[in-house]
Structure formats: structure tokens, C-alpha cells
Length: 477
Image (cartoon, rainbow, N blue to C red; front, side, top):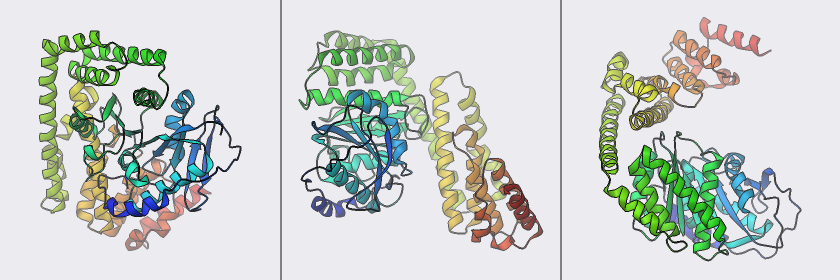
């Protein structure tokens, strides 16, 4: 689902339309309010389920906006938690699928439609205010959600990734799009390109950036996104206009823009453009227009724009260099003995220094994005080659991924475990045991895999592996 490919989702839309007929009557159960319900089972499909949050003010006497949220690991509660504060503040229901996760599109569509159908049977919903949200590949599912349910939605919130491959920006079947990304995220550039492609388009859009990596945004960013959706609902006359709220939101946006002027005038100018698009028919924005024009003429903006273009070109050049090395590893023209050469070719030490200590914020963020992309790509390709039993490329990719893991907020225990599997397939018991011990030192405790995983068969009778099995059994007692 949630990887960069979209699959052939269009073939499934006809079937979706048949499922999405309105439900008559509600299941009037007194569900807990103000707390997350971890798992509701879909009544028409018991294999499907979702987490849900109902605001404390929820009642069936009125209709409520709803956010359908997607986490790439099918962790519904995790997705709901991110929007819980915003849901309570602005009166939304939030649901998160416990089935939709990275993989083919068919199961994702099934999970999304089952969740959609079940929520309409259980809860009192505002049919004009349906929203979707997601992180990483889940953001791509959120972008396709309107197609899945066969109707245009009020808004999409995409976090840490843009739209699905094969989907064009003008195919976003929604009235408003809000993108959120960390400036250390390897998908940050993708989000900037999506913003540029939406500039001048009729689709209302807003992009929020924070100094994080490839991760769900904090609740503060989710609140800002939902608040922006509230303003859009007022613009579309989907809810009554609350001018005190509009003015408050406008002031917060202006304060953010002013703070950015001193840090990144280029980013500040693009924010001013989005503020103007949002509030121009709601408030007097004449002063903001003057501020925007003043900034556009300033030397600081022109310098910031030139720096952004330089950083972007250097980033693209660096990715091309990495891709060339990746190709050579895959073709096995670079082998294990060339590992130190590979590290020099990709200039990994330089990137690490810049990511951890460069005084230039933009270079520090760029280096962090590149290192994260390296970690993710090499981990993925290493796992693929391990599945194919091509241990040479597998070991190189996994070791490259380990070289940068300290810059990634992830536990590397499975990288060590998979390296152990690769060496075991080569009948190298000493190296396999070494990497298992490294995995255990980093909280790996799924010891049953050591006996069940067939990758260890070539070394199962070795003295080193037998000693390891006895040791972990003793420690687990």
C-alpha cells in the first residue's frame, strides 16, 4: 500500500461504488467518549477493524466531521493519537485502520471501504465533511481515499509523503490539501515539488514544515492542519463563519511568517502566498500583500532563493552519485572488498559531519535527508537481496544502512539480525553469531526465530550457533 507505487487502483473503483451506498439508521450504542477505543470490528467484515476517538461532546443529535487516518504499519491507535487533541478541540471523530499497511492496493482499499461503511452505520456523520489523513505511504493512501469511497472529500492531510505514483496533483478529488513534512525527511523535496505543482491551481493548499525527520508530526502540527481545514470549511460554507477564530488563526500564521523571515525568507514568502490564498476573501489582507511584496524585493529573499536553488542542485547531484553506487552493488561490480571505497565514493564521513555539526542549518538538514534516504534505501534493498539469497549485495546494502543508523530514530536490531541471516547462508557461523549478539545487545528478543528461520540451517550444527542457542535459552529463563 503505502510505498511509492499506486498499483492499478482504477480497476477497483467500480466495485467500490457498489459498496458505498448510504446506510439507513444508526447503531445507537453508547460508545465511550473522550478516550480512544482501540479496536472496533467492522460489522459487515469481521476481518477488518479500526481505532476510534469520539470527542467528549459527541452525540447522535448532530452530525460530525470525521477523519479517516492511515498509519503505514496498520497501527490505528497511533494514527488516531496524532489527531486526538485536534479532534477534541474542534469536534471531530477520528478513526484509524488496523488493517491497512504497506503492501498491495487491494487490501488497503478493502480496509478503507470497510471502515467507511462501518462508521456510517455506527456514528452520526456530516456527509459534506469527510477528511482523510496519513503518514508516509499512509499519506498516499489518504490522497487516494476519495477515489476509494467514490466521492470528493472536504480535505486531505498528507504527512511525510505526497500523492501516490500514477496520481496527478489535478486528480486529487478533494476541496483542500494540507501537506506536513519534516525538513530532515527524505520526502521533504517531494513535498516541495507537490506544493509547487499546486501553486496557481484551484485546489486550496497549505504546507507545514517542521525540523523533524520521517515521522508522524507532533500533535501541534496536526492541530494546525485541522484548524486550517476548519477555515477551509468556513470558506466553502460548510460551517458557520467564526470571525474570532479566523482572526486568531490569521494572527498565528502571520507570526509564523514573521519568524521565518529571519531564518528562511524564501520559505517565508511561500507561506505568505498560502496565507493570502486562504484569507483573502475572509479578511482585509492588504497589509500582508505589502509585506509580501517588500520581502520579494529584498536582498535577503533573493539570497535565500539562490541558496535554496544551490542546495537543491547539490542534493540532486548527491542522490545521483548514491544511485550510481547502488547500481554497481546490484550488478556486483562492487564487492565486499570494496566497502571502504564505497564509503569514500558516497562521501559518508562528510555527510555525517554536516548532519551532526554544520553551522549552516540548510546544509545540516540536507545532509540529514540524504543519510535518511541512504538508510531507508539500503535497508530495503538489503532485505530484498536477502530474500533472493543473493548474499553479496545483501550484506553490502545492510552494512551501508548500519553506517548511518545513528542518525535515524530507529532501533537497528533487525539490521543486525538480517546480516546474521546473510552470513549464515554463506555458512559463516562466526560472523552470523557476532551479528546476532549485536542484535540482542539492542533489545532483540524474538529468540524463537533463531530456531524457526531456515536461513540459519547452514550453520545450525556448528559449535558457535549451538552455544548461542544455549546462551539465549539460559538468559530467557
